[in-house]
Image (spheres, rainbow, N blue to C red):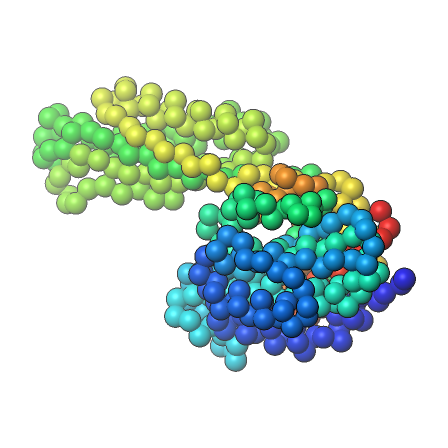
Length: 393
């Protein structure tokens, strides 16, 4: 059966815009997506799609096909950011200090649209489509908790598809990359302890500020001198706090930062070297250190077979000339990586910029917006890729 999924998506375009603007006006932070979750459940119930609550505010729904076969999952994240919306438009956020500044309102909308269309053609599906609405992507990665609650089982998911709107790609285009797509991250906290005292008599103290300064400089040598230049890696110190007055040497300084790497062996190496450098400098300078390194998001890897499938299905919708093959991975992190570690996956970037209209402000910024023309394109690509996977592969 040859279905024009883009035509189907355009037929519900007004509904897509309405959903997206409603979500945009009522953003909710991680694990607080109660209103968003309620709206989704109301829609699924109306469509006759079975659903269950997962990981507090998350939802897992299932469209059962008319024939037996594999199961493909489509995932969307739902949470917003703690940021003031400063756009001057009718659908700006109504929630003080909260904003959909990363496009998750669009992702949720696209999954609802895909659900509506795929459910319409469920009898043609050779297998199932699982719909995963993930909470808390921006904070601790809701995917981890959903996986623990067996969201990829019963029925077992064979592959999973995700997307993210991109303000660096014009509407009508998509970007996709083979292999590693996003970095892994490891936030860290270092507490340097010395001996406080009078600023006029440093000889009677062990200065944790001086120790911290040496550590911060030395940490940059890990990437610049110990990781081959052809491999991306970043060690960022984003916060340093200590001291109360100009003439007092404090007892403690706290340093906070994050490690980002593209290879698992580099991830382990940088963590090990960070500890060695911090402890070595502290020992040499008579201080002590407490080091905490968090295990955060892993690298996101795209499956080669699924990349080829998505390139084909998206080119059928936007044209091959509008499918951009991305050369470099992003140093940003993405919770979808947890799903990609469990199942063959493909993650792509949906163009949402419109430079002529001034819609190209950066994500995680107070002026972020999308060209809503990307919504039906995203719906069509999700539908066609899922449909082709179930009926052609």
